[in-house]
Amino acid sequence: MPVHHLGRTVFGNPANAGNTMTLEEAHRLLNEWVPNERLRLHMKQVAAVMKAWAIEKENADETTALKWELAGLLHDADWEKYPDDHCRIIIEKLEAMNIDPDIIHCIASHGPAYFGVEPVNSMDKMIYAFDELSGFVHASALVRPTRYEGMDTKSVLKKLKTPSFAAQVNRNDITDALSRINIPLEELIDFVITHQRGVS
Ligand SMILES: [Fe+2]
Image 1 (cartoon, helix red, strand yellow):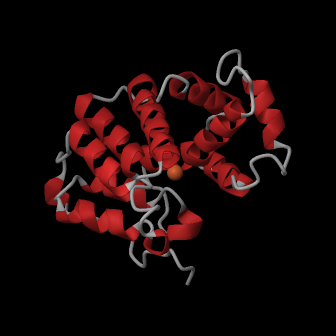
Image 2 (tube, helix red, strand yellow):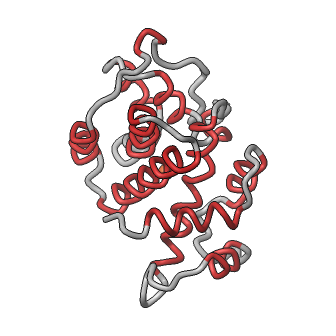
């Protein structure tokens, strides 16, 4: 069994449906658990993209949009301090806090090949699709003198086809995530650029 496999597919307690935390609480947890500013930025970017997708594409109400945002914000919260136990530690923490099981399942399914948990609903599938893509778009911005300014989807697509560029980004995960949703890669890249460019 791969090292990160969680060994279960059910998370949280259905009785906790609707239980969230405030963004202030989530940021406090993030600041406490993730000293690495770049990793924190990654989670804030995924959170911004998830929230925007929920509102713009899923017609989400306020609580649902917050759930998408929180899942994005916390999905790698244990990565820096507990790399060997990622993402078991954050999952257990959220379960102990009686957080909505949708948020916990979403975090657990953001890497099916690693955690052994299949994305089920649209929140699960989108975090899987956005996670690597968000990191890739940011890596693409960092090598441009003007960063996100004037950045277009085509240049990101071209870099994706260059295996040596941002080689740590797993292209197979992106392809697999895309195969589970009916949304063109170009549209996702465009959405990521638009919604994470202003995040700091
Ligand atoms: Fe991530």
